[in-house]
Image (cartoon, helix red, strand yellow):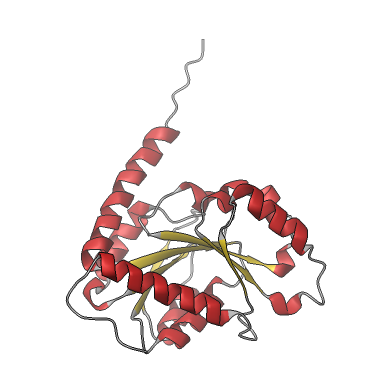
Length: 231
């Protein structure tokens, strides 16, 4: 007779406890945080660069970059002006709360308003591991195809905002927007969505306004010494 030991729940439970610790650390520091998830090439790093450039005068941003082996994305975030920490997962397809905690301890949280975590490019594993961040954001992109909400429901269910990047390619790529939106609405009705293009800048204004509003709302609930800079 074979006995099966289910370890999945215990592993996720331990991760959730560490994620709660990470959340407390961010709350106490007054730092609002986003977990950016996407498939490889959807434009996570490009969106971070655009966001850093646009918010440089009003929001102080730190970035934790998850990557299997390189520091290329963290180097780009640092070059764009962020305090950036690289986390190499050594082959793991996602970040988890264990990896985030030492990175948080290395950041100057007291001097930040916003932390952006760039998760490893993957539409499966990152959806299963809480990090302790305040909101999950998924970046989809037009060239990936309109079927992704239907094929990766776990990812689309667990987000609080959706970015549809590379809309400048809509005239050139077969992308059924109605089918895409139908899948999104079935899984996550009413989720706030930002169609935009990191290449042309179209649609970025609404995304940036949403971030600034979220940061200010969070700081009202978690006040600390040092007011946000005025744009």
